[in-house]
Length: 239
Image (cartoon, rainbow, N blue to C red; front, side, top):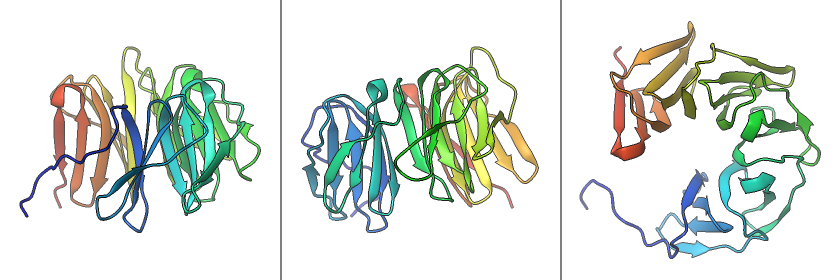
């Protein structure tokens, strides 16, 4: 077997928007038209029926419990082991772009027009007043809270006590992806923005580009960011 990418027959022509990986190695992927795919650690792909036909944009995992967010405030919750799902009335009226569970077990949902909600019991949700009105595009768990990124360069730190901007807004810039590894966080977006948070706080790194970065992942060795038009950037950590 050679190192490299290999195409996997998904069995669908729908757009695939987000995925999660369980400890078992199983992968679940959501997409347009209510698509939910299961990929086993052996690479076998199957489709799972869900009670929704709207586009699914995001998926979050807590054990076998899962929450999926979609267009127009659609939210599904259920159990991946039993493959049973139902609608969750969270009060979200706009697209649910990202869902995650934080270190305290609270679910967070982020979406259009500054929509940010938190649920500590898995039933009811409370509005967390975001300090911005633009779209919130991604979030990641950070301790007993989350870091949220969105339009106008918004980077927000939120917990049960509220939400506040971690960096100044930047008009005409857009943040799309955020990732946490240990105490280090990365947030990326357009134009060519890559912010890093460590023990000293947030720092903007120089990508030497104006590309549209959509997602980021990091470990102890560095980070990798990917975006539109095939753009792929790598950050190497120097001891």
